[in-house]
Length: 313
View 1 (cartoon, one colour):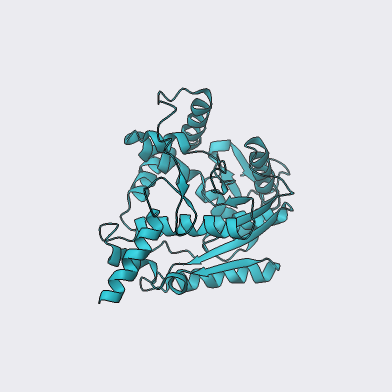
View 2: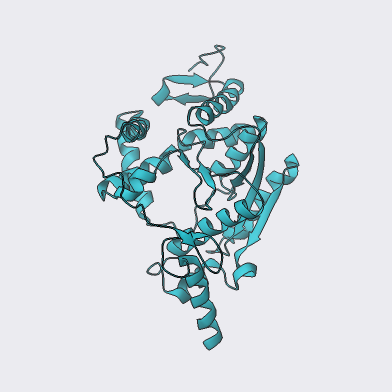
């Protein structure tokens, strides 16, 4: 297979795009496409400060690298979740995120959840009895709260995450199967800022996971290969496996599925009432972040409950 641009031996073959590129031209193509997506979906400008949520994995580090190469004002945020699982997962993730930042002279904000709130994520989940034996629900709750808090407190206009096409297609597949109206209406490359919530963007939403893997390998970016120990058996992984089978038979199916959804949503063709999920938001009396719940937000209720139970033991 030869590179479409120069005729040299190709390093990456993307069947869904009918495009093969050598290392040099692939590493040019990815930032060019990212810039195109940023402009197409009006994610942010070069004048805005961007906070990139980094986990030490390939997607978030690739995103930070790409934004840095494109000249954006992008700093990183790493959340220490206290997840081990036999491989010291959180420690290794933080080491790789910090190594990436140090090698490029970039700023990385680090928040240790245990130091901030007294317990790591698995213990918070166990004490609060949320998540039915897995800490994923509490983990998502804490990450959303902390990412928004740091973005707000430190004056970042935008919060960028490394969600790729495989992630977005799997979420869309699950939301469609369950006809989750509120989530379908909110899913997209950009979630506008509102009521104290930072603007959230996904610049990699149209890149396949394997394209980000190839980018990191060709750029020499060291990242953590292991999945979170609690991800095993998750519904999202099952959906990804099903979509991969479809993609193998019909290259480009995942991209078509996602893009056609975005087009339908833009036209208002989702057959969903547009006022679904328009709950009234008010500031949480404790942390100040928007919530639709009466009294404290879910995050503060969870932290308060774990602190009370810890004191009673």
